[in-house]
Length: 193
Image 1 (tube, rainbow, N blue to C red):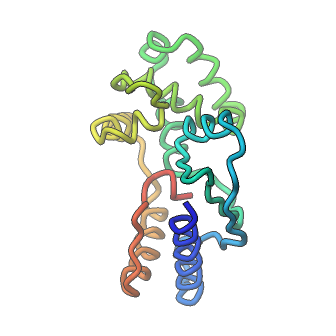
Image 2 (image 1 turned 180 degrees about the vertical axis):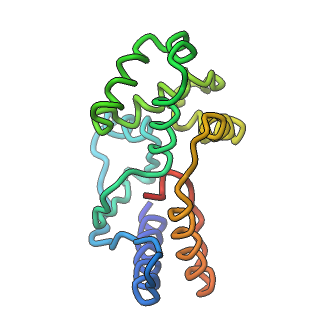
């Protein structure tokens, strides 16, 4: 874990420095990394919890990185929220008993509905394929591009769109990175705020 985690922290710092040095109005912000550490996993219970959360450990250790907080939500959370809020209630309720409560919470206080509940609601609302043993909802969606396509098709079918300014910010920032021979190997909806 130490080499991979250290490399990730080093790469994140490199991207932060590159974007800061080339920043122009309309680019995305990159959070500044502050602390990188390798932590010992002292119990089997903790190791199991990390694995359940999709966090890999090696040799009884896990890498951790702390960075600046950037206010907002990630792109996937936005898509999930909008699909759930806009999906016709009669279709949604057939698949998830507490759908009405989730929709009401999203309308009144979107931050009250955590990402795990949003994913569970999306899986039921869109009848996403069943999990492999021990697989969580996010893994189920990310495992299969067809499942991800179901989510974005529903988003579009409901007449929803992503603000083009957000996409343009991402494009400008990735272009600066690529022009400097830096390539993001983990660019997906959960990594875009």
